[in-house]
Amino acid sequence: MFAVKSPERLVLDLEGVELGAALAELDGKVATGDPYIDKLRVARNRPGVVRLVLDLKTEVKPQVFTLKPIADYGHRLVLDLYPVVPPDPLAALIEADGKLPKAGEASPAEKPKVARLATIVIDAGHGGEDPGALGRLGSREKDITLTIAKRLKALVDAEPEMRALLTRDGDYYLPLQMRVDKARRVKADLFVSVHADAFIRPHARGSSVFALSERRATSEAARWLARKENEADLVGGVSLDVKDRYLAQTLLDLSQTATIDQSLRLGNAVLGELGQVNTLHKARVEQAGFAVLKAPDVPSILVETAFISNPEEEKRLNDEDYQDQLARAILGGIKRYLAKHPPRPQSPLTGSPPASAVALTD
Image 1: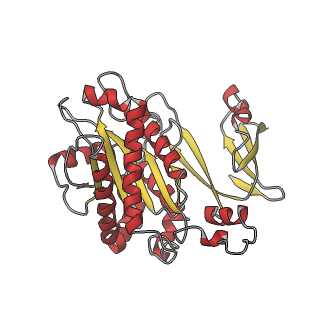
Image 2 (image 1 turned 90 degrees about the vertical axis):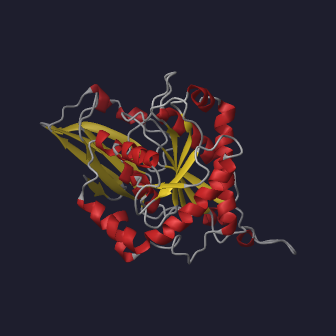
Image 3 (image 1 turned 180 degrees about the vertical axis):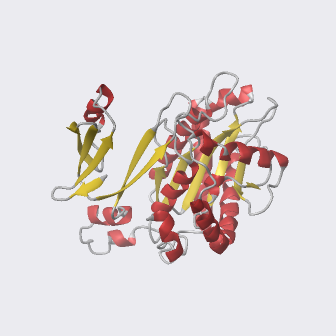
């Protein structure tokens, strides 16, 4: 892979690959409103090499990684495009509204009640070849979590002082560490991972909220659930036991105590709101070693919306009105937390990442 300037292009040469129908049809899959890709061209460059050229709308920072075969999927190459300079929604708001104020009228820069928009990263659990928990009626956790995550994003985006980003917006596999990395890349203020619980006994029910624990999980159920969720990385062919994990552990030692404290505060606010729309499985925020909660500088919670293994709750999870109630409850908890802990430009949770974190994000 290499970049070409004037105009901006990204080139990928695939060796040992023949030009088939799937590659030839890629151009038609680029959406008109794609923020980064203008066009995509595919052609045979030389014997045994197929070249993909992405005509870009702007300069990007690409990231490439591979996934090993699993189930019906073969080897996969994943290309993520990130902006060189992340967009500033508050600056865009001011620019769009940036006329000189009339006498006695506040300027656009004075209108927001917070120093800047709070960035909420919403993570729909599982996806692709990892369906998550399965309900007795055939529901798949990955579908329900994505639906609720999209509803929550729409609600957050409607708030004047917040914006939301999804870790995945479709049915595809995303490694757990990649979900954390995406949140850290956009310097998220909060990270909310949406799941649907399951247990071996069908009568288990209720909503739960988890934060990260540096020590033992607070209950046997929490330990069991953490193991199941963390094993999802093995589904995608990516081992959790890699050297980056030790670098992440060093960062955790530096800043995780304060982050966990904030995560518990956020979790309590969300749990209080969820208790108004569903029975609570536990009346307090539990703590376990979920890999997806290990961002060292982003307060993070995992919300188990309900038990998909409970036939009654499975039906409710598929109901649009109930999905909306759950999304509004999570939003209510987020708003309660931000009312007490608004993002500040100089906050260690909202400023530039520490020097030691650059290796993880850049």
